[in-house]
Image (cartoon, rainbow, N blue to C red; front, side, top):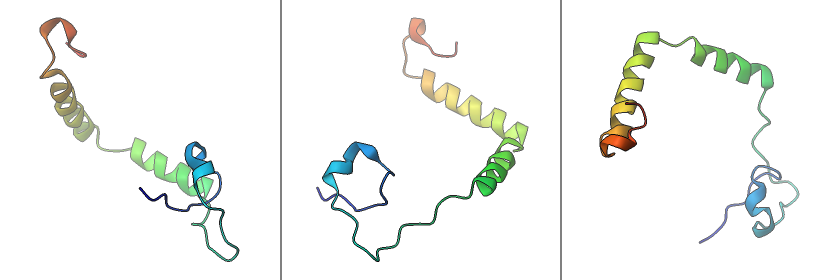
Length: 74
């Protein structure tokens, strides 16, 4: 399996396996903390009804194959 080259420090687990980055190769731009905070705020202001419905689907999916004494949410 071939490892992709990335920006230094993006994934320290396989850092030794990656070839060093060549001069002139562009890394994706650094994330803007203000933009990330704004995006997080938008996600947190999501539709509450949709979030409840999504949680119910997730809850049922996680519990449907578990034995009665081992349910996560029941």
